[in-house]
Amino acid sequence: MGKILFGPAGNSESFFNEGHTSTMEAPSWTKAKGLDLFEYSFGQGYRMSSETAVKIGDEFVKNGIELSVHAPYFINFANPDEEMFAKSVGYLTTGIKFLKNLKANRLIFHPASCGKLTREEAVSLLMNRFKEILPTLEEELGDTLYLCPETMGKTMQIGTYKEIIDLCTLSKRLLPTFDFGHINALTQGSLKTKDDYKKIFDYAFVKLGEERTKISHIHFSKIQYGTKGEIRHLTFADEVYGPRFEDLVDVLIDYDLSCHVICESAGTMAEDSVTMKEIYLKSLENRKKAK
Image (cartoon, rainbow, N blue to C red):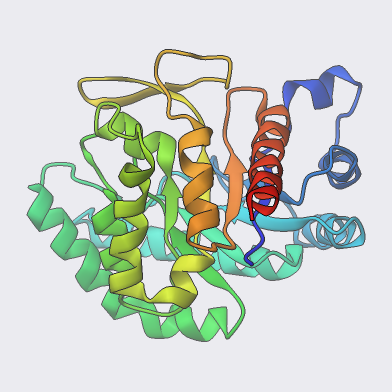
């Protein structure tokens, strides 16, 4: 039976309200909540020394919390400008160095935006550039680290679930990040039943195989959306937009997945992670009782 791990993307408002101020305090706080994971974001750039990263990584290891890292949001492998392409490569190679310092093993990133290109042109440029840089990235990643391109929530971004899975076919060091809030926002609320989730995993099983699909990365939150997709992240208290974790949990169990599930709720990431873990464990228990 696969084991799903749960944790927050960054620190909840409650972390700071309780008087905590430092990321060094996050591992023990996360552990005390009964959680398993933490995702550290360098969304606005790599503003941390290598020495600090090593100390933080040691603290997460000591508390038994697995760590993933989110790369800067500035990455765009479909920008025709060669200088911007080089910067995007740099964001990944620097991110891999931080993975090693932090003892993390997954670097999540937003792959591309259309800009002035058609969607077909942008996807083609993204795929060709990744083929070009993969040998260098694979050498840096070794046999234990992964790059995790993320499904995106806005119409002008590259990152439908099929685009992300197709990108991941290029290397075994690529794992998909299924952001189900983004997928739901982009498709105007399409995630309503088990089958809506199953078709996504089914596509991954066919394209990537069982091993990588089972350990894929997941972001989950409820997200407000409009005609162009994602507007803003919400909390689990929202009853309008979705998606609902209850619709996903049976698929995680049915398919015997061992995914990392990171919560990106607005300010209640840890609390909503706890809710997801409780729903998951209760569903597992109900399955055992029914046998």
